[in-house]
Length: 321
Image (cartoon, rainbow, N blue to C red; front, side, top):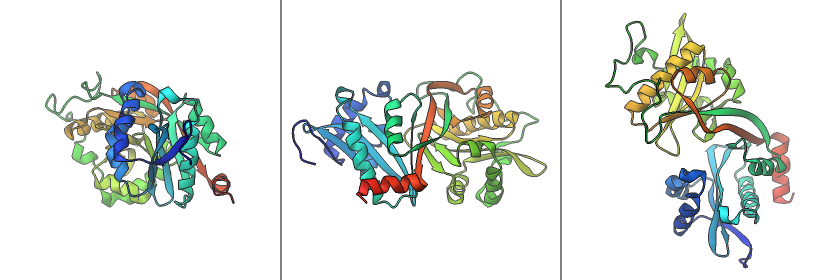
């Protein structure tokens, strides 16, 4: 694109763009934007692309194309400097991002945003993306505070479990139990509602056998069994873009989910988490409330997907075919 005054130029991000990006990101999400923390990591990512939009020679927008697994593309980090909103920056970034996606041979492309971000939602819908589910964001603790009242105590405060409760080691699930875990997921209502995606912070990734096995290997699974079978299951990982831990999946009985959500907080604190959060739906909301989680803005999250015939049509349009 020709670099003329008033024209938006979209290109690969550079080291020298960081100060300007950090400055305008400080005006987004009330200064809590994670993008400045991951800037260097995104710059070094050999897969996908990290884009910057430039207006009159100044960085005014960003977008990140992330390859989560072969053919599974996640769009994140779309930001526009509040000072230039309404000047076509987001549209220019989106057009260039879709051109790059074509070359990645995608089988599915997804993005997530807050429910009231109507500009991003409408832009996605024009490209053929369809809403696949909504979920609720809940938190326990924060980078500045102890877990909310009612959450599991810090390890030194009380014994980890009562006399009639199973120990943490009895709740743990290892990689050798991958078959049992996958069978539970296939019958899970929460798994169905979330379209088989794991809520890894602000990223939603397909819960393939390989991905779930990685969670189990990293000791990120807890289960309560009944009659020798998993009755309630929780899966968790450290946040991709920050110091919190993410409870990315939980399902089972309400009592069981409350117990595992509390145990998750104990483990996360032991591992150095500065707060915890979850993206959940259905009955898990009540269960996590019982474990001390609370709602925090933004509460409602929406996830969009481009796949199948809609993806093929979008790719043809972008490539001019």
